[in-house]
Image (cartoon, rainbow, N blue to C red; front, side):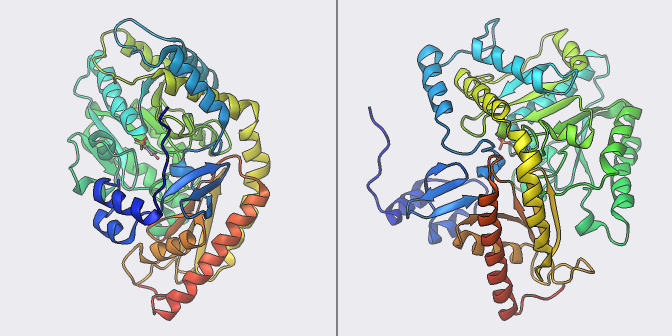
Length: 463
Ligand SMILES: *Cc1c(COP(=O)(O)O)cnc(C)c1O
């Protein structure tokens, strides 16, 4: 057997990485000068790099390692499945046990009336599938002109051309384009864009942009609306309480399909199986990935409401991926769901981890640089500001302060991401109160260091 071994010092690995490895969402030439931090192993919420540092992972990888790292059970299941049936497809009137078992399990935990799953290899792929499903749905119903999908600015739905287009990130649109037939309305980000309105009034107004857009496009041309229950990559933007009920009302009134992108909010992240339950959303389709396998295998999917699935099933659907329902990924996902369920991880989030983290997270607003603190389940953000009362932005280019704070976190062995000048966390669901203390202590230290340095550099000023 040829297990991957390494005898190289970190600097040599970094040089090889820079020479041959193109990193996603990275300025690769800048990284090459600096050298990537190279992770070696992980257990629970702790990462270890090649220099032996123990880093607390406040982001669960990329919001995906819900059950924590290093669970042997998943490795055993993967090895067994590879020996039993390493691969088979589900295209031409065949199926296999892991895909069947996983689809049935997902139907069991999904909201009532959502009993069908179309598998993909990732969240981006699943959202590409969703574009096809909603257009095919209206096509079969004799309304093929209903093709436009409405997303939101600063939403994130993946990085394929389809997922990137559904998302509303101009940085992504600039690199590769925006598909025709996808448009965007404003996001419910009260802190940055709410002005003098109350959060409730602002949430309502942003939701009503959907109605205005439907009227402008003509309802006969609109297929669906897509949104994340809580925007993740956009900065953990928790919508005001008025937002989702109004979106739901508008989707119902105009009869357009509602897609909830649950790639982050699914599988316990918000304290329920799905974010749609937390916010009272009744979607036609839920996109899932990430926490479905806790990142141990790449797998995603679309959970489809019976009424939609029945229409799609009434005729041929020319769509699928070689790895749709991959047996090893499906078996691992199933084991992951078993662990979440049997170890009561969602109850742990709701009754232990969330209440404790909430208390400590909210207290960060005492820091001179922290405006609001938001936390739903184990998905949180803090807004950095030079003036809390006015919610002012910094004079420096957006993201400068966030980036510098993130660098301090990284140096202090804490993974906390920045989106613009917001700092965000989404730790593994298994995090304990003692580990939350470490996370918060390192966050405070990093905020202090960042604050001192920003003041010294004259950057703690409002724009
Ligand atoms: C990460 C993410 C995706 C994309 O998933 P990939 O597996 O990276 O393709 C889609 N939607 C949301 C909400 C995400 O956070």
